[in-house]
Image 1 (spheres, rainbow, N blue to C red):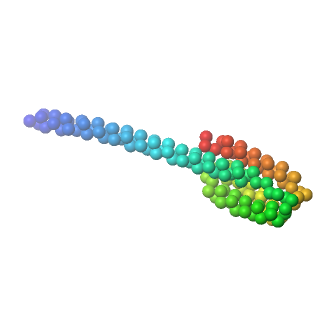
Image 2 (image 1 turned 90 degrees about the horizontal axis):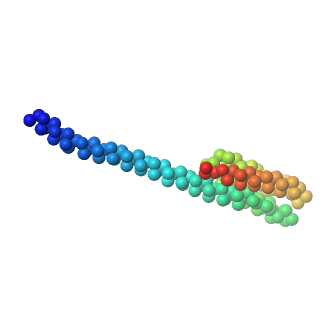
Length: 139
């Protein structure tokens, strides 16, 4: 009689063990899918930040109108600051901080029409750094 009970228990336990193993595989598969979705979202976020960063880094004020150049630069400084705060990629964040520092010089009136050529050269280098960083973001 005990043999029959053991056989019955084994007959019931075997499918349960198989179901548990399958459940574990499903959980692992679900975790891998979740990780993949999270990585895709991070890549998308980094890509969106890069598009904004490239647009911001291409900022060139009209130095022929000093007051407008300063006003435009002040608005751009705030835009850069917000994007830098939201950016998770540290290299891109540093690039944005560098661009912000440069644009602040225009906003403060330090860069004039006469000194703008040197500033534009430096700004183009910062733009190149942003685009280089963005070409590496996301893998």
